[in-house]
Length: 363
Image 1 (cartoon, rainbow, N blue to C red):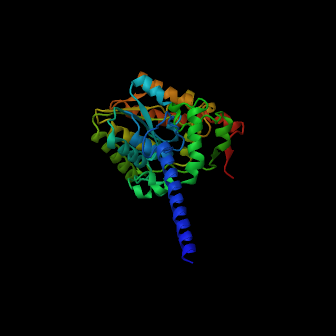
Image 2 (image 1 turned 90 degrees about the vertical axis):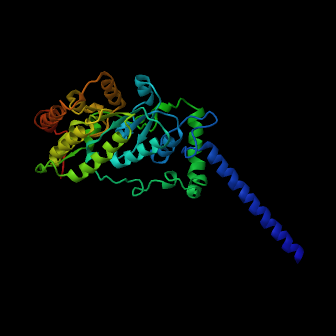
Image 3 (image 1 turned 90 degrees about the horizontal axis):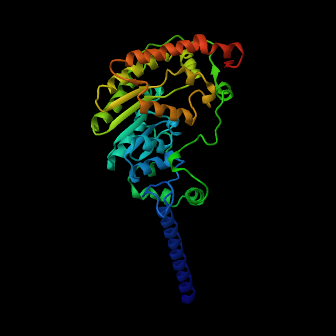
């Protein structure tokens, strides 16, 4: 009887030891390969395979070597980091949040500044971000907060994650040693996408009735809070050159915000944000929104907002040459030019599409 009990106890003991050994090996493999870069930059000659920004962005900002940040929403993702490195020197990394809300992007800036000296920040300002809430959205949208906080105890969700072990690590290894993965194209989504006028036209539904234009100060409270967030970053880091820019959305987007009555409020927000930013010596601001040859060529887009990497490169080239740069002397005139462009969209550029029945209307 005792002998059987001893055998059973020894079996349980060996089983527990085996389980602990397996757990240790699994955790050690995840820690060493670390596909989300939660603990360290790539080891063993692996490439930085970046494709899951919600899971990888914070880790790379904490652990990679860089002195330049490319900050913004999904329209910033299709930049090649090496373009900026070649043009301005240094080593760049992306700090991306799909929605591009100011609070979320400032959160990423804070993470970057924890242990890095930043020489330059290239920051894409989406118009909608100026009227968005000034509260971060990571937790409320279900981001993996165990990768964001500094709590080692909840790392079990990462170290023993079946998807990490069976999917993410093999993907990391395959891209590192098979094929020609380009580390400069971090988070790039354009590779498998098409850009042609049929796509934005097919996705755009035009409101039948034009909503009366809302007061330009309709988003004043949100705007003030977002201005405070961005100017606090600029003021806290006088050693960093901040280069802000408004990207080139398609003419369909401008038509949409006129129909929704938001255009004047968006223009006002841009004026106020630009004025606030330009009061600092370490800031430059560019406005690319009034480029009709780009915005009216719908072959540049896959929807009303998202443009091809060629447009990302074009905007960088214009920053390099100083085109479309705003100053305290010309920013109001420049942004009023954007308003005038939007009027031409309504009265000129969109008319042929309407006459040919290429734009779908609400039922």
